[in-house]
Image (cartoon, rainbow, N blue to C red; front, top):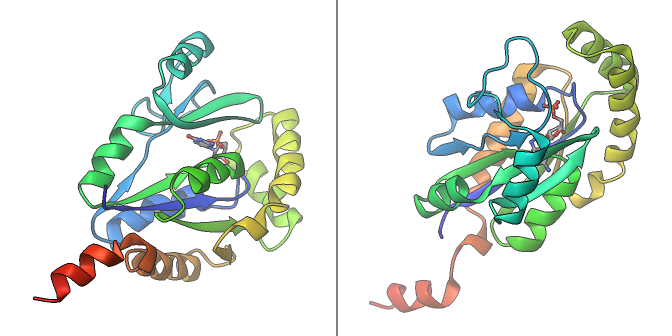
Length: 202
Ligand code: 5GP
C-alpha cells in the first residue's frame, strides 16, 4: 500500500464534513471515504452518498464479518469505515480522507502510524457551535444537547492530533486544510528508506 490517510475530526457542527468534501475539488487524487452508519438519514441525505445507512443488526453482522477497518459508537449510533474501498484507494496511491470521530482516529493511528496525518477542527467557542447546530435544524433539542456534551469530551483529544484548526472563516480554514493535505503527501514516513536508497544509487 502506498497512499496516505488524512483524518479530519471535530465536534458535529464544526464544519469539518463540508471542509473535507470541498478538499476533493482542490487537491488531486483524494478519495473521500463514505462511512456506514446505523443513524437515520437526515432530510436531504442520500444513501451511498452521505453514508451507507444500515440497520443495527446488519452493522453487527458486518463487524463479525470483519468488514470494518474501524468502527465506533458515537452519539448512541454506530459508525464504521469499510475496509475494502480504503485498501483499494491506498493501493492506487490516493490520499484517503476520513471524517471520523476521536475513537476512529485512535484506532487508525495504531493500525497505520506511518500513513496517518490528522487534523482536529472546531469552532472558536461553544456558543458558536450551539448556534451552528441549531441553525442546521436537523436534530431534536435532546440530540443537540447530547452533541454539545460530546463536543466537550472530544476536545480533550486535541493533543492526539497533528494539526488544529479553528473554523471561523470557511475559506481561510479550507486554505489551511488544503496546505495540510498537500503536505501530508510528502511525509517522510510514507517512504521506505532502504528501498529508496537502493534505487537512488544507480
Ligand atoms: P453525524 O451523525 O453528525 O454525521 O456524525 C457524527 C460523528 O460520527 C462525527 O463526529 C463523524 O466524524 C463521526 N463519524 C462518521 N463516520 C464515522 C466512521 O466511519 N467512524 C467513526 N469512528 N466515526 C465516524
